[in-house]
Amino acid sequence: MPIPVSGKTDFVQAPEGVHNAICVDVVDLGMVSTNFGPKHQIRIVWELEALMPPDKRNPEVRRPFLASKWYTATITQKANLRKDLQAWRGKPFTDDELEKFDVEKVIGAQCRLVIQEYTKQDGSTGTKIISVMKADPKVQMKKSGFYERVKDRKPQSGAPMSHAGMPAGEPVPQKEETDVIPF
Image 1 (cartoon, helix red, strand yellow):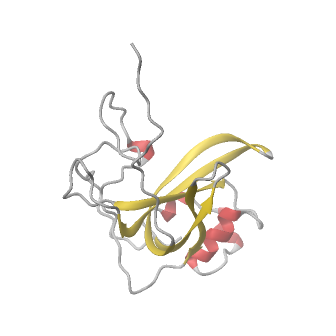
Image 2 (cartoon, rainbow, N blue to C red):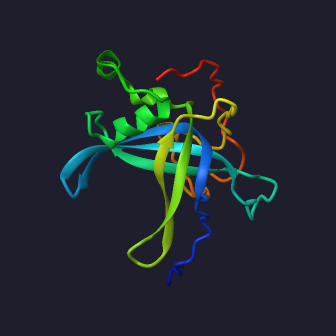
Image 3 (cartoon, rainbow, N blue to C red):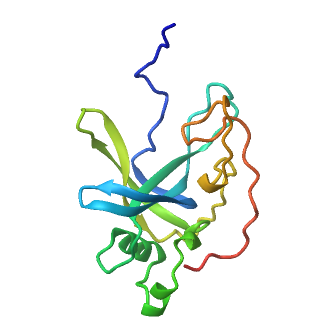
């Protein structure tokens, strides 16, 4: 019996521009093959303040856009992760801070992201984060509750999944975080 597949997608790219965002996950991707050999990679995931169009199956639900960026898991002087973290926090790291830094401290921390559209090799377009900046102090964001950290997900065979790899439907209960996250 044939299984029809489609090249169409209903995925909606995050819009270009400067967006208020909150970090919702740091994913350890393990060793990943790169142009420079195998590297330990992580992915940082943010929820944007901007909301996606209503879900066709559940029109009253408006989820925030998600954006993510891959990094090599290092904070050496020239590392992109270190450059973005320093821009995000608004100051360079001290040697002492670098020695005991845990990247998961950024979960729950706000920032601003600059997202730009680009053209892929196949001619289609995508969006990517080109800059991470210090949060606007006038904006107070909280996690929406729709995103569940990758490490906390339980596989559910047969359950419909959203574009973010989340079961479609209601928000995921979140632990309330009241501390300011000083990273």
